[in-house]
Length: 107
Length: 277
Image (tube, rainbow over all chains, first blue to last red; front, side, top):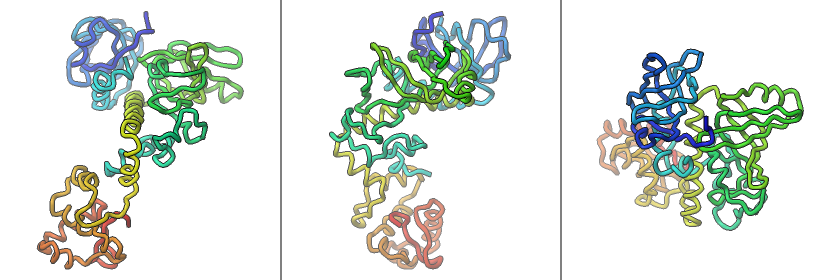
């Protein structure tokens, strides 16, 4: 696993801009099916996260860091439980800022 | 409730702890050269690791970003390596924009306990002193503690953006900005009925949805003659001068009082603006 590459903040709408690159996002877990987790992005897109989730149960909100392997899915390397409440609005705004005017601080 | 005119000029309001120099201690002119070593200049900056790694430096100790000297920094990231040496722990912290080595020197039991509690894969908040050696950057850690509320990650990066924007804007606007900022943060007396600072009026209406009549009453009460009078103004005077029916006037005054723009003075009939009160 190459952890030296930056992982850019994305939401569902920004994911297509970063296909095959390293991304980080927070999803609200909707369900899972054979190694695939379906989640809702902070801007209400449905995303598929592949990879092996941690052995501990996932909380409502989960951060995944991994490679965007399509416009709607991420091959996750790192899963972090963010708990059952999370300010998705602020996170979504941060995604916009980190991909826009202030990208130089991040990428 | 913040008036935006107060809020945007004051980094301390955002920083909460007053880690950043206030307006008065941080003039954007030559007295704030990177070489100045006064304590006020040594503020704590929220930065991304990418910003830290790209800092310009003429030697290994003087780092400058957006025209501000960088000595102490705070970062938020994930621990991806941890090494336990006898007198120190080193953590490699990845904040998604890059990685930086953080060294926590341990002397007492409490230091060891803090460092022991930090596990690989956990998110942490680091406060420390930025150092450079042979082109590498690392942080001498004052404190490293686990993140328990993950909104702190979001807020940290928003703070990084704010700090960058704040220093950029101060520098770009140069010295001409200073008087305005001081004016807007210090509630200087208004010079006349018609000359209420536009930013202040717009802040009232934008932030609090003041209608025209409310604004009119406020402007009236902010005339120097009434600001100077401890008793304020009798409501009859306001009503007559502005030609507003008494019931409407009382509604508006009530709303101004509730929003903190106006207060009643010697009795329930006298009102005064809170500006410069």
